Length: 560
Image (cartoon, rainbow, N blue to C red; front, top):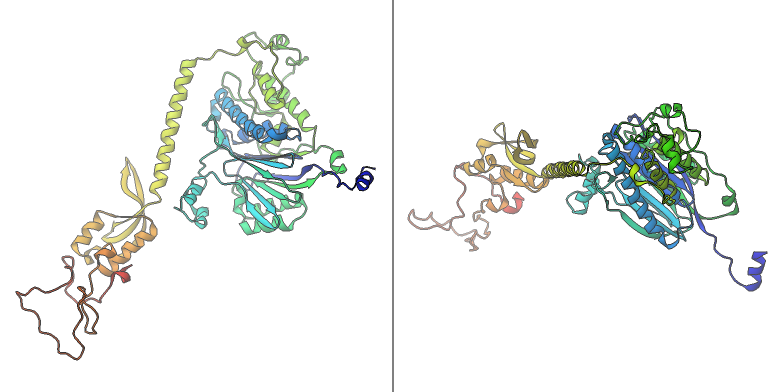
């Protein structure tokens, strides 16, 4: 009927809203013992997080971040969607800091985040870390995100070629992540046009082990999203898969009546052999319970949060103690209700946490409300008693925080300084031969800041004394190419730079002398040698100790 009315009036039918069709896949890989990646995909939100921190809590960081963001999967954000997405990631960062404060064993954990939020025909993009976002539009496959890595910074500064990045020893050093280090991390934010027909690939850095052309061909030629995601993961496993790999495929399409009636997708069960993300510790700093232990704890007959703060107080063993499992049960129930309300796919550590009920939140009687608020974003009741939180010791906390910050700054400074030295080269002596070293010739305590790169065939005693002294004192080079140039000059001219090479004498063929005067014609007899007391326009003196035997004429251009 509506279409008939539009035809009668001559107006075009209203454009249907855009949604995401999606597929997600995650695998622990062939080497790692647990999956630190997490991902969520829905009609309006897609996010990939790659946790770090090893056994200390990489899975906790990625799962907590992704689970805190799932409520954004809604079309109701309007013009504020970009701001809401950025604020939500900052909120997740605060949650990670609070988890570390309660359980110091999680210190150092962090996670990357790459997210897309679809609202009102626009894609709001947020990114931090080295997970990646690619877009296929009108036949062009392009990386939209920029890696926040030390190697990428070297490339941006022109100090490293892109093809050298994959073999660089510090290619996995991240410069920006979410975690407990930076209270306000810098995000890459952008608002992009959403077009029907666009295809997006979000992935963790585990996919980097697959050749770029193979990834592009798979995204172009595999029309089914689930098949495409599965193929990319299989290619990673065939490449050895030394890291976890997570892939989210998204197609931007117009909503149809079938999309509206689609039921929610079930939660993906945890990967076999992978440990679920552990729940955070209680306020005493002890580790959270394992999923099986949490399921065996007797639950109170009344939900203390639903009945108010007074009932919550009564449910506790003692007025001053906390129930370490209260936050787990509450947040797991709220989370499952949230996930059941819409179509989605949840994979990786976040799926394992949701399945086991071991949600990484801040446990405890009063703080459990705050955990629920992070998941549901409902206002906390005004009657919340403030004195139920355990009293902190501000001075001791501040002192430890300052000390930790100083240690982190010193450690990062030392690491970056060492990384810089490994981009330098110099020419020196090794076993009476000329050698090229990588690094700088200084030492830092017991640590030698250089390593032997190449030993040449040039013997030290074949060089003039002046050049021998310079080589023993080391000759700095800007890069490996510059060091090789210095070695070539030593081999050809006995000097370390082309400026020191000897000037050619005038030849019998009439070539100009160094002073620029013309040589006598070839038919003229050779002039007699100058008298011993007559000044001769000889070329610049050769370095002392040079061999008196005749050597071929070598120009500075040849030395280069």
